[in-house]
Image (cartoon, rainbow, N blue to C red; front, side):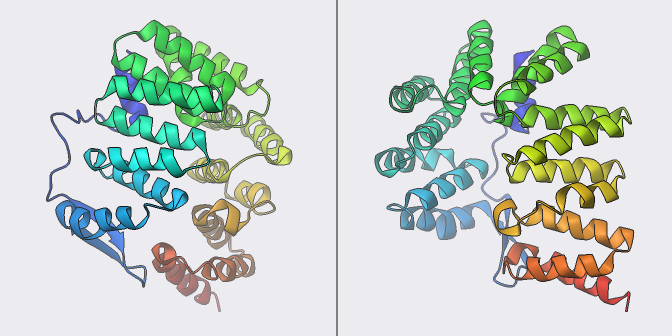
Length: 312
């Protein structure tokens, strides 16, 4: 049961030992004009990833980003030294030790992963990220009861850490059904500073066509002001997929900051403007998004510009 849940939360059912990405598999990249390119994994690794990783050796923020890129692209075997370097130079103990722990986990080095995570806890305390990954170590060792106990501690420490929260809540559903899943989310939503559980409860209400209850949850989260960019993306995506476009604009547009909350939500806001015929509002957003000068979204911005011009 836990295996299925953990695989789903990792976003793949692939067994990394038997179905790892092939060297010739393509990786998507973007040129300076925002055009999408397909590059073989081998070429990307040799010509782009490894040199960029080395260039980031003395910059903790950039090294962290490159390690995450390497993990996501399946280059974990290249990362232990970089992860150890991050531990040495990063003032953010939670981030560095969690990252190195994940690198060890990705390479199947469970003892090293646990040692790293516990070293992080000794310095930074039992944070949600460190506890969630310790639960993964315990699960991989086959101790599901201890893993679930540690996971609940992670949720208490960080109820907005989606990976831990949804692993824990989904476990309750798998064991006891939908009612237990919703009860788990409500329990987490009552924790101090929680907002992520509310978003998942709101998704449930939207699926049940209980729009008023979903809106109330969203409004509470946004009024509290301690959400992140992922919260806005999730709200926009869930409202858009259920056809509540005006609510996207009513709820998100007043709080959206393209510099803080990323481009994806801005694109969703422009899409809602276009479909609702609120063209001037959409054009104002387009100006703001264009000023970001972010190549991966340029093609989308060009398409919106053409669509808005068609209304003239």
